[in-house]
Length: 116
Image (cartoon, rainbow, N blue to C red; front, side):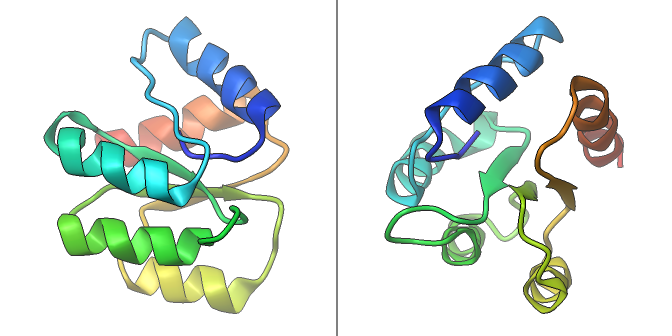
């Protein structure tokens, strides 16, 4: 789970933990890339915020794809820039969930991606 907002990390982490998912968190793209380099094979899904300090989500996504072309990433953001989202989907993004989201919507999207 990659997000620079501590409340989002905590809230979403709690939702995932409640559903018995093991959660790793990163507060920025650099930390996310480092974690993925070390533990990528053990990570089933990266939930990635689009707007991050220094390195936005599309750049983080490309870096993760360079490490593992099959990296499963779901973008999470309040932005609605369809061109950027469409470009990322064309490059292998597995899904998108708009913020704010409910527990039910998060689980629905997560299951769709993991069961695909």
